[in-house]
Length: 319
Image (spheres, rainbow, N blue to C red):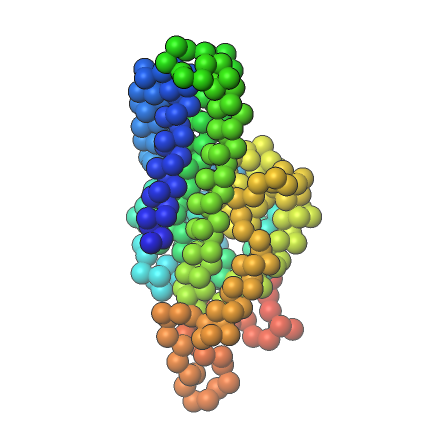
């Protein structure tokens, strides 16, 4: 059902793109729009990860350069039964993260220095597990293609103001104007629906991968506060990539006051804590710690080393 819903929304986005092409140039315009869509999706499939990482100044790091962070991602990827993704760090004070790549074999995860410095090790584990959840569900490809088509619809809608009065258009110039105004809004709504659906799924999958829903819930609360008070200048320059992040990086300037590509953080936290209250890890087993050590069942199942009590937690998984 989840796959069918996303497939339907992508089909709706493609249909909207073709409709805009028809309103601009009739049947010929629709064919041209279809060819453009194929070309843009082909480019996005092979190059979107490199483009997005470059936009945000992400630098790839090895286990030698960031041993604890890369080691943590490696352990989470093993738990998720995924190939080891490339690991990047973005030099910005805003806490945030995203995943990209056309498939699990070519995936990359990126975290900001703000996230690594602000979060405990457990919270970083929750965030990166969420991103690996996107990789596992192949959301990264879906979201990239959606963003590409949405951008193309906006571009074509601008052309509709000047070239929309063709004879094949049953509504003439009025129809072209309506398309120019409404098409970008409709594309934004579809993109928003896909992104919100994916975020809830990745939250649940990330909680299962990490082994403790509370880690991600706690991280989301900090991420929300950080994104509202700290600017992410690269994201402000490239708002079309905002939907890739775990929380909206544009909150600081309220760019999403009308439409948001992310569900309410409060609702996400509530869902995660409800998940914890009903067993915590879903399909991931949570056995009782051996020897009655007092360790929580979900932490025991996670195998992510804990840094101890709150008073002894380190900030940033750097050792």
